[in-house]
Image (cartoon, rainbow, N blue to C red; front, side):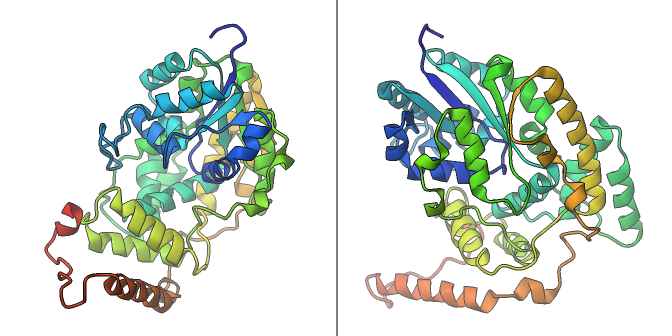
Length: 396
């Protein structure tokens, strides 16, 4: 880092900790922010996402080529060039960076050597993180139940890393009562790579000194989203009132338990026939986050025994944060979850009425959209039939 280097605030997540909201505020108010001395660089549509995909080497997973007009190669470098040209403080943000490997962290440090690098970690109570991650995985095409998620992602970690068998014992009791059997999902290492704050700190603290690793807590459920923006802005050195956060539409809306159950069944029926990036555009954003999210319904919560086990992990994190002297913005008490959770059942406990709620209106909207698309074609008699063969949709 050269003398007088400009600050670069790299917001690395954690995933599902208000990252999409903060990115929406920053993107919507680029001109206002630049006028106040902060740039949110732009290198094309979805450039923050594409840059993170490039750095993480995940282009195949998200359906992007490396080279060419739609390729991701060079996107991160273009963001840095835009930041240098602006000659002011810069913010780069995406939650994919939270899961970066040590080698990828080292590559980012080398690429940003001309800046005074700051790392910003937003963090939320683990109970909300867990249920949000599970839901996001369903939105991204998985069909796993919360019980499958709990077994593969939560109790394996807790039993192996935290010494707790609470979740495993509870799962076995449910199985003996006739619960679901064999699990087919992955082992959940991706969740903990990005959500285990110990692991994230271990990988990112080598990038910056402790005073430049900023931890921002997400306020408890029910608080105004503007509180998170105010905390984040204070880290970057922004006046929070310099932008109108009430003008930012809600993004990444949560689904009710009935809609999650329905989407799981849709994913099972699709059976991988719609590949990326088409799945993200059509199923995740169009169907799930637009159509299903508008229905509402009972919101998912983790069972109390899960929240209590996760709080034990958070207690260890808090002790480490306080011992190592990181810059904390917000209240570490915001990370506690079990005190606000009732003794509820599993998010898998869904009635048929909840799953079918609002579905006729959704189907009517989809049929209307199909009719509009047909009317814009060369004529309904000349339009090809919808392919029915397995695998055709993914190929198309």
